[in-house]
Image (cartoon, rainbow, N blue to C red; front, side, top):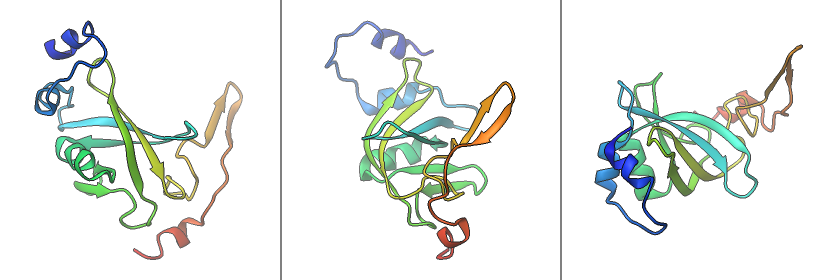
Length: 146
């Protein structure tokens, strides 16, 4: 953890720090990425986890439209650019260590490429796994426009 985040542990509510200082001290991984968890702002449903680069985070904060870093494509990924199922940012928070983001979003339709509302639809217990989320849109139909 950086000294900046250690210092922030003890400051009062309302204390401000520059965005550049924070981003300079984020716990980016070796690829320059940080995990970002997207949560529906009004229901609290956890929708997905993806990766963000400094550039994608700055774009998200500047535009209000959530932009991730696609590791498979090796480029910026504006959520919904191929499916139309966008995420609009309501709030962004870093955790206490500065190494994970929590994004409060307004999700249009399903967040998951499977057509489900959430990517977290495989429920586990000590006896196995069970699918506990319905498909809202057939994935073939979801990506027919791309």
